[in-house]
Amino acid sequence: MKQTVLNIAILTSVSLVITIITNAINRWLFSSNSVLFIEGIVFIFGGILLLLGSGGINRFSQRAAVIAAATEVISGKEQPKPSEIFRRDAWKPKGFTRLGLILIIAGTLMLILYFISL
Image (cartoon, rainbow, N blue to C red; front, side, top):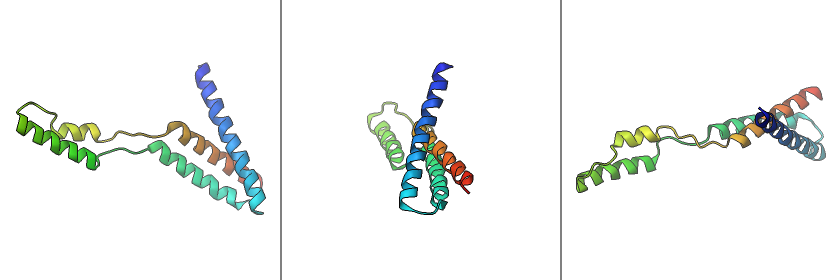
């Protein structure tokens, strides 16, 4: 339980620092506060994309399936079937969980700050 609370505190504090720095830069560069709204939305969408990550069947999966099938035919030894390779590679998410959560929280804080400052 302590570790979870500590992780949440760290994620929130880093997000708060990012929000404060972004707000300071926006106030220095721009006179309007509407940029904070746009950046908040971009941070949230970027965080969601980082959480999703990458994965799935790609060219390397197809090549591995072809090579496995050809190796089994040539050597006569049992190799993983192409269907097994595709099943294994169907979805292997490789997301950046912490960075994604930090960006989502920072984007939410930016939106809150924008609506408070209206």
